Length: 41
Image (cartoon, rainbow, N blue to C red; front, side, top):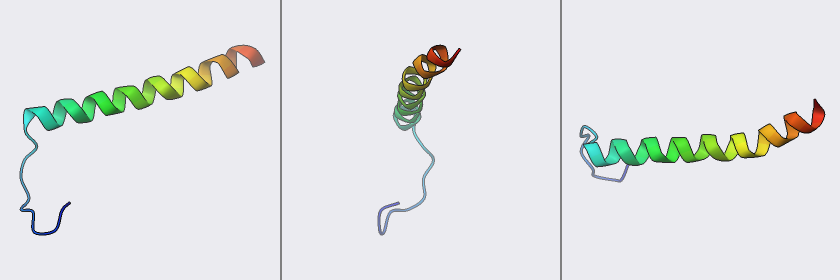
């Protein structure tokens, strides 16, 4: 949180951005992990 910034509820755009970031991280992890698992099996 930035200095002097008052606490505020996240607006819709911030929620969407957060969801998109989380989905991208999960997709990246899945892309790295799944080939490794399929190679081991």
